[in-house]
Length: 159
Image (cartoon, rainbow, N blue to C red):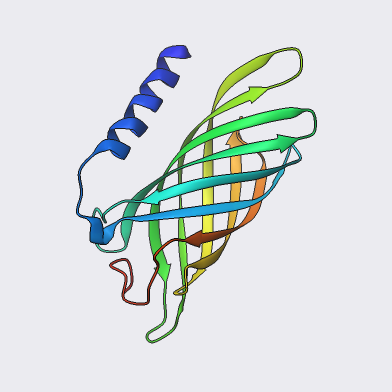
């Protein structure tokens, strides 16, 4: 299990450290609530250059607090632009991927692997709402608000 976790962190580190052109990148911040564990969370994401039209990697991390526990999550989401009507500022992105979750309780700590499925209803202003469902040892459900820094209507991820 430890070997899997070390490899997952290695893959995330390689992706975050790769050199890509700046026009297709985007840092985002977010926060919201987890269900099981019941917590509030804050985090950040980094939208990488598209792999192909409407498909990109978006590594992200979160820190959850509350319910007698702390949770640090690292996620590697493969995202797809599912829907964006012509001349509309709204879009729907869906995706998911593996996660590494570090749980810290008062008497012990544990690191577990997980998988997430995510949907983001976003606006060209940079604001969006994220819905995330977790499997294995990820939080069961998350809902949050996100903001993509430097987002503009003509961003490279727009159709």
